[in-house]
Image (cartoon, rainbow, N blue to C red; front, side, top):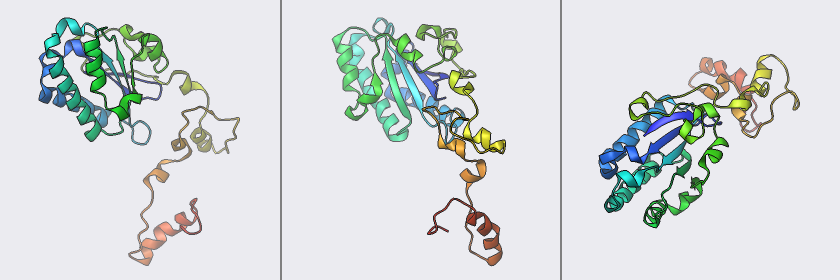
Length: 242
């Protein structure tokens, strides 16, 4: 279980390779602890509040039947359900999508995996047949290992930590031109034709740090009131708010 690269929206990508889980795949407590450690790392070091607050997941089932006995399918489902419950209750709203790739053809495993996915989450789970083509729609090539259609080297188990993040995950989106905030910093009034107009445009680009931090409307004294009143009058507020 490791982080590797980011998609074009700068969301970190969690890679889970079941063939490498070994005994932990049959131990619910260890599996949940490993997942929580990995996700807590991302929350602390891989997120940008207000800009990047979600992650995406690749679950690779390559060679899973060669290292996991069919007799252990039941315990694997139990572990998967425990992890799913943890994700839903502790990290609700963080996952954007899951791509399950290299799915073995056995009906038993298919039923087990589909049965462990909550009905309301099935729209976030995909089983792409041509996963390299599918992942190329979401990632720049330098963000993915070669086994997933990228150009980054494939990692051995001992090479996955420290986690790997790479520059320029946005690719062309990062070089399309000035944003609204760029134009405002240059003292210009941006027009529709002068700034980028892309699907992932964020309103955060229209505001500065002071706007996000806000102001405390302290009415404890006249002196405290004077410190913020003039700025509040110049803010984009409705008459009722002012």
